[in-house]
Image (cartoon, rainbow, N blue to C red; front, side):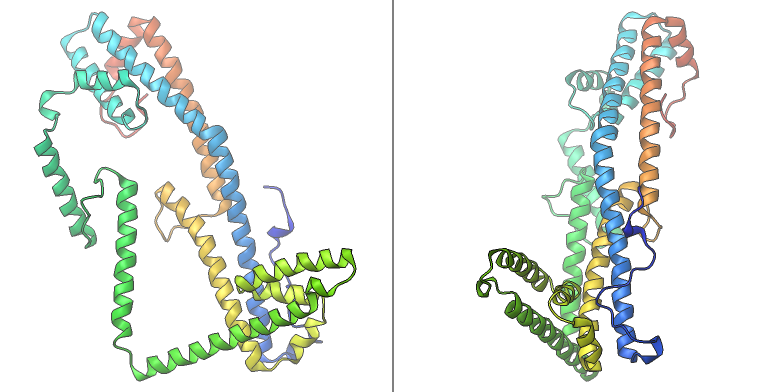
Length: 370
């Protein structure tokens, strides 16, 4: 990834409270500056994940997915070659039995990847009768899966949830967990102690103070930037643009952006230095909320890729490592596609080569099947 200002390890906010020396700042002022720095670092982290996400999407759409589809198509052709050998090539009983097992194994890997009609027909042709479930047997298996899910997670699966769809199950589990947490919090809310009520009252007062601070800055900016009060066309256009930015920042409760906009019109840094510690504390509260939001957005992207990679919640994943994993996956697909295509052609053209491969091929292994 090309270097950019976003990769800086330390960013000084333009709305930090400046002083002759750090010792001349009050504890509240130092905490305010620290909160600003924490937000700037989190912005860098979020920007890096967003860039990595966009690059991965381009790579997946432009390289990974086309390669994967080519590999699936090549594997389907390979199954057809095996089926043709069963129909036309003289094979021993053991060779035929092994090849049928290979066909079933490959079909089961591919059946959810493609709607290729011939593949499904081949699969049904060689699938043993005893392995085909009746509607009643399928219902029993589904019921067993629902029971196992409830035992494992403590939540039941609705009848509308397809037990064979992992994405639907994961979504349902998330919704159940959210509902449980909401119910648990509601129960806790009904059993609050005097100390908890006092804490909540304090937090509510701080939130109201923070909102008042946001509103005060917003009103100042609206008063200073209202375009209808500007006679000059160019200045009116500039103020209209600034007012739009002010409105967005106010709706998002983005204190930093509001202060930056205010800096363009007033000596806000000097005003910040003159604020009382109580007012600065209300600013810190807003900054903490903004940091939490940035952190949540960052974690949402990170956790999505951890789930895709089968990583645990506590495993460390960086944007750079994500791109490295994708690069490795693309290289693996390219190699597997090349090998599968080569083998298919050899199997079609050289019966001895095919029989030698069949002799040494091992069924039900975890490695690539070629």
